[in-house]
Image (cartoon, rainbow, N blue to C red; front, side, top):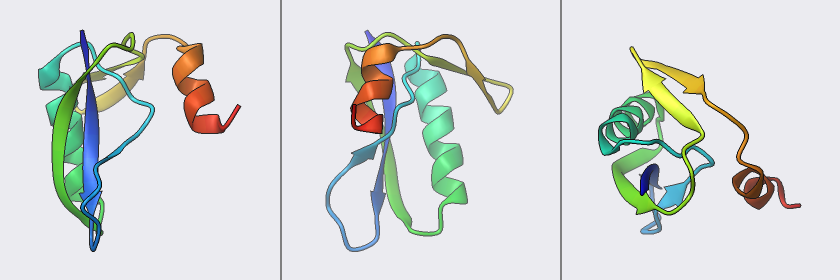
Length: 79
């Protein structure tokens, strides 16, 4: 099991993920909070469980790429 951050934005009830998948819930929550604080249009954030393999770590407030995850990258690139 892995974890994905999701955001809500102004005037929209839908949750939006991105291509980042973290090994731990704590990493995903820290990243979601950081992203939430940087986005001007965000209204809420959360983390959700995922079956995808982790592709990022969040270390000392920085994203660390830990390897390609072809299926996730294709999902967001439209391939």
